[in-house]
Image (cartoon, rainbow, N blue to C red):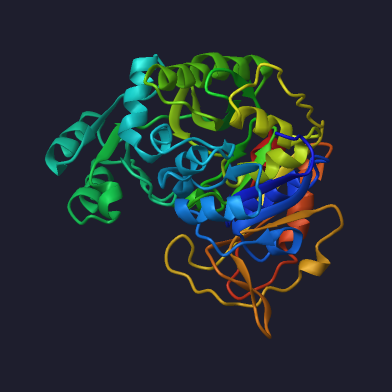
Length: 428
């Protein structure tokens, strides 16, 4: 395939996909970027295509029609729908795994069993489809457990419990009241771990793993890590307290064994593998795997990448990272603050006019998620997480202040954001 005149299709509609499209457009190899279905921000820099992210047949048709040479899968829904399989069957290079390999994210029980077989450190756990055995297991830990819906639940299917009452309520919500439908028909209950969280990312061609920079994200809705779990309210990179030795351990003990175990099962994983870790007093433990870039971590990692992302993704998609494409990182820090709709992650309204983007300070990046253009009204909200505002600086403190200086200028009815993202790195 020609390495110039490349047309890239990014699948998805969030801030992660906006960041991916933004980074792809910086490549001298790329002549056109499409985003399906995209959002109000991607439509300003690329061509949005009205195709759902989880529709394999339509995505194959549009990729052929537009002569796309690389497809980048953004959201987990695209992986779980088998978009990668359909595109590869059509001979189109895809950065992202197929459905079966993607079960490392779409099934918590599959991921835990893979960790056990691969010798990957994780919490003590068990899977259940009936409530009473799950309750008994939770009582073994005095309710200090995490209850996880086995399937995909839009980042909301995890309840971290601090008592037997909370654990029983979470188990009943999933297995008795079916709060997450089929995604919660099976639950994983695991011992609750304590420590700092860390997100690590490795690009893989199914055999080799090339480590990217790490990040730390913040899942709770409110300052001080209060409120319900969300899909992520912010992130920063590089994370405090993380050195090259720890990242080497994460590569050797987590990412490489996971790819090796997938390959042993005949599952060819090509794309980025994301491991969510807990740094416990007893060493690192895996909380979860994701079969794609994290959101909002992607928005703070890609601005720090100085080198071209496209050759790296293309090499992984074509199954050959042996040449080790150049990866060069900047020394600056990045902090991303998510501006969300009031009520998120629970009930919230959309359709509010977004103002203030023109007042965001120069150098501060804004990646769109839940936005769209409404005729006669301009840019309006269309989701729970509306924008990720990213500040860069010589250190985390300066990057954080830059991000907040942009977030405070974004205005729409009931907008809110966390003011303590990355504060831990400043306080020390």
